[in-house]
Each structure stands twice: as C-alpha cells, then as structure tokens.
Length: 459
Image (cartoon, rainbow, N blue to C red; front, side, top):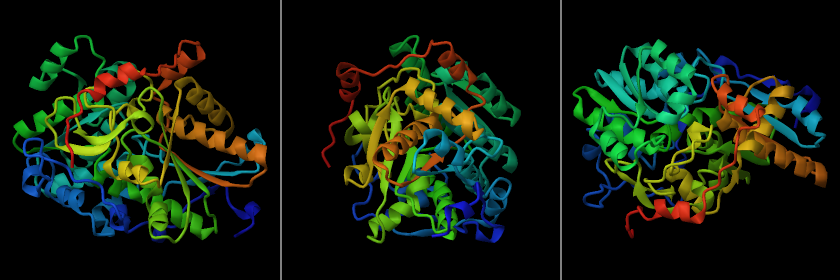
C-alpha cells in the first residue's frame, strides 16, 4: 500500500479510467432476489406485462439476473463526463477532529446540478425512453433529489417530465421543486386530486402528508393512462442499482489505484439506490469469496425497513397498482413521520439488498434524526461540504465507527457514500439549530398497522 501521506486529499480518475460498463451484482448472488409478482395471478411478471409501465430496454435490465457487465451506451458515457468522475475524498480533517486512528474516505456524488447521485440513473432511464421514441415519463420524488435529476435528464433529451412530489417535501423544500420547474418538469404535490388513486388516498387519509408509496401510485396511473409515456423510478428496482454501480466501480478503481482496502463500507438506505451502487463491486468480491468486507446500511429510526420490517412480498405502492416485490417492508400502507430525510421515507427496500441482508452479507442500523444532524454539522464544519440529510445518516455511523477505533486503537479504513448536498434542506437545519427538531420512533402498534396490510403470499 502507498504511504498514507502520498494519498491525495481528493482522488480523481483519468478520463480513460472511467467505467465503460455497469456491474450487475445479481450475477454473483447465489440466492437471486425474488421476482416481481403479478398481484392478480401471483406469478412472476413477464416482460410483456411490464411493458405498459416501463421502457423496453429497462425491462430487460430489470429481469436479467445473469449478465455481469452491461456496456454503458456512448451517449450516457458522454453525459457522465459532465460531472464524472466524482471525487473520492480522504477525510483528513474529520479524522484529526475525532482523534481517531481510523482512515476515513467518502465518495462525493453531489458535484452536479441535481446535487446528488440520482443523475447516474436518471440520464440512463431518459436515454432509453428517448431511444424508444416516447414523448415523456412520469415519476415520484421524496426529498426532490430524484425529481431534480430526472428533470435535468429529460431536458437534455427533450422529453416531457411529470413529477409527483411527496406533499411534506413539496412544502418543506420549495427550492428543489423550483429547480425541477426550471428544467421544464411539472411538479404536483402527492397525494393529489389529479388522479383516481390520489383522490382515494385523500379520502382514506384526509390531511396526510403523503409518502413515496402514494406518489408512486399516482405516477404509475398517469404513465399507464397517457399514450407515449412510461414510468421511471429513482430507487429500489434492479435496473436502478445497476446504473448506480458506476459509483462503486469508480470508487474501487480509485482505491485499487492507491492500494487502499476498506474494512467497513457504509451507506444510507431508503430504497437502496446509493447503497447498492456504492457496495456493488465490493459485494461482488465478497460473494465470489475473493475478499471480505463489512457493509452497514443506515436508515432512519422513524422508517426502519431493515431493522424492524418484515421480509415478505408486498406492494411497492400505497395504491396497490404496481407489481409486488419481496423485500424488507413496513407495509405499503405505512405513512412515515414527516422527518427531514425525505429520500429515506420509502416503506420498503430494494429486493437485491433485502436478499443480501437476509442472507447475512450486510448489517443494518437505525439512527435518530437529531443525532444525524449533529453528525452533519460536525462534518460540515471540518470538511467544508453541507451534506444532505440522507447522506448524514451514513456520516453518523462513519463517525461512530471511527470513535470505536479511537477506543480500541484499531486502524480501520472506513468508506462511506456522501450522496449529495443539503443546500436545499435548510429548513431542516434551521429546525435543528432552533431546537425544534424531534426524534420520532414508531411504536410496535404503529408498525403493526402497516404490517396488517401486507398480503399473505407464501412463495
């Protein structure tokens, strides 16, 4: 390994070192993620059944458990060059502040206009929609990072973009909403009166602040009822984790270049896109028995899919119009508390990550909101980046692991994903600074309401 002093503060790859392929971790999984089910027949979804909802090429990627490496189309590679490679940063200042012998690295994905990692998949999905000759796409967004990224990608390819934004985030994060509109997207707070499923949800839950499950239902309804449109999703699906593997492939290439081997790899987890992308090639080595790493998924204590959810087939949306996925879930009817990590409020988790967690390849940890913002502030003061609330969950646990090393004297190497910036999340920071932020942890009775709606599918 090269001397630590020789490792730069920021590690960038050369243009000729950028990934040319996405890595499909499913190819190396002994236990493949369970297939999507048709809710009517309880049989695995076929490509032709998914065609009214998703783009044709994306369906192929969604269903492919065997192809290890997918060539990245040249048009997408060219777009990636606008903001990739993203830097792998050695957190020297944070290490010094903590007084830890641990070496801390983070992969920073906020160096683009959308402010997050979401653009990696947004541009791919927009590309395939354009290639198919579609007029536009619909989607949902929580904190607004995915909606922002997709609106930017659609603008690039000249596609219409309709975004259903979770109502609480629509109200909490008006500036991210306006970025979407700047790129030409229409943005509707969800649940809304513009769709049948939205009206039904409002009637059943009057005054609801919304959820990603609600917004997904509305976006799918509009996509399937509007000629020339398809639905695209920013997390959870296999295809999304495939596109996001560019994060991990870049990270591993940079680490290999300097002889750095991480002991612990940490990512925040809502639906699974950034965590799945970051860990992909490292997990592949673990699955193949080549190396061993410790993986930690970090989620909010207010929406604890991994740590308190059930591993079962469930609907991906509140309106129950989407296929069913086997995942760690709190129930499609679970309405999370309006915490400020809007991108981590989905009721379920990626089927890929759920299977890996179920098989013991990953750990999971739930953290409370105020401790997350304490970590975010500590990080911002020494590393010079204001992190998004979602990313700050990973920061919290990275700091905790580094402090454990301080206690034990172990010189572990810690890697975490810094998924994006928090400059559109200042209402959250304001509430934290004013002492108005609270920690909500659902009771077992609260969670049971969601569990009661999980269908009884024994497969």
